[in-house]
Length: 306
Image (cartoon, rainbow, N blue to C red; front, side, top):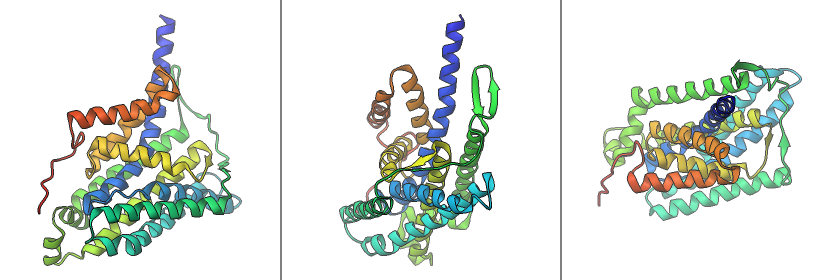
C-alpha cells in the first residue's frame, strides 16, 4: 500500500512539472496560432524568437543583478526581453513577410525558414555556440509540501504568470475592438479593408503580441531551468507547433489546451516509461488526434474560397 501511494505521489509531482512545461509550450503556441489565424503563415522563426528572448533576459539580468536582485530584476529582465523580441518579430513581419502577403503561401513559408536561420545563426555566432547559465539567487527548493508532493514558489509564480497572460489574451481577443479586428481579418482581409480597418497595422500588432509571448516563455524558462543555449528554440518550436495543431491551429483556447496537454503527457509518460519516449508520446498524440479530429481539438473546418 505504501508503494502504491508513493507511486501516485511521484505521478502527481510529474503532473506539476508537466504543467510548467505545458505552460511554456502554450505561450509559444499562442504566437503560432495568432499568426496562422490571421495570415495563414507557419512562422517557423517563432522558436528562435523564444530563444532570443531567453538570451536577452539573461543578459539584462546580468547587468541589473547588482542593482535589482531577485524577482524585481527578473521581472525587469523579462519585460526587456519581451520588448526586444516584440520589435524583432515586428521587423520580420514588416520587411520579410508583408511584401509577400499576396504571394503563394509557399513563398511565405520559405521566407519564414530563412528568417529562422538568420536569427539562429546570428545568436550562435554571438555566443560562440556556448551555453550560458542563469543564476537568479532565488531559493529553488522553497515551496509548499502536500504529502510527498512539492510545489516550489518559483513554480507557483511561473504558473500564475502564464495563467494570467493566457486569460488576459483570451479576453483581449474576444472583447476588445482590436481583438475583434483580428478575428475579422482572419475571415476576410479584403472586406476588412473596405470597412476601414488598417489590416497591415493589425497584422503587425499580432506579430508584436505573439513575439512578446514567446519572449515571456523564454524568460520564464531561463529562470526555471537556469541555462540558455542557441539551439533551444528548435525543440520548443516544434513542440509548440505540435501543441497548436493538437488544439486546433488558429484557435487561442486550442493553443493553451494543446500546450498543457502535451506538457502533461510528456512528463507523466516519461515517469511511466522512460525519457527517451517523450517525443513518441508527443507525436503519437498528434497523429492520433489528426486521424480522429483533423482540425484539432478546438479547431473549426475552413472553406477555401477560390
